[in-house]
Length: 136
Image 1 (tube, rainbow, N blue to C red):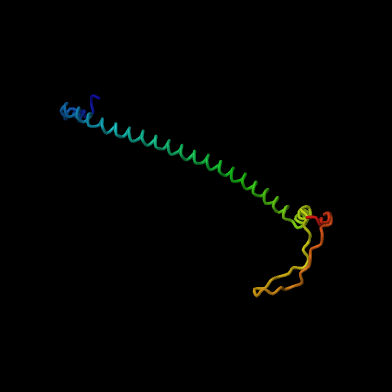
Image 2 (cartoon, rainbow, N blue to C red):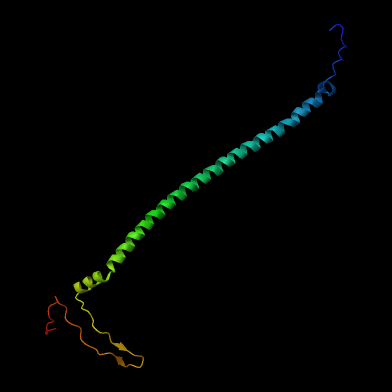
């Protein structure tokens, strides 16, 4: 470097231009800002954690309720099949005969004026029932 251009003199840095007191105040003014940013980030992370926990809890409850709905639907279908089986005409006839009921025959109707429509007749005795006693 003996024959080249002379090096320019080093320019004084910003630190040399500002007095020492103002450098300290700049660092002191930065500290609350940094604490604020850290506090905002921490509160954001905590709120995301709480939100995620609430969503997961809701998901578990939804899954439980879906399973319960499926179980209750199966139970309802089983009960409906039982009702259908018990209300079949053949089943109803067997239960009625077991209670001593007999077929009624031709129906007779009463009109609004009190007139009887049809011919009333006595129902037949049940096939397995004993004859009524006259002593009663």
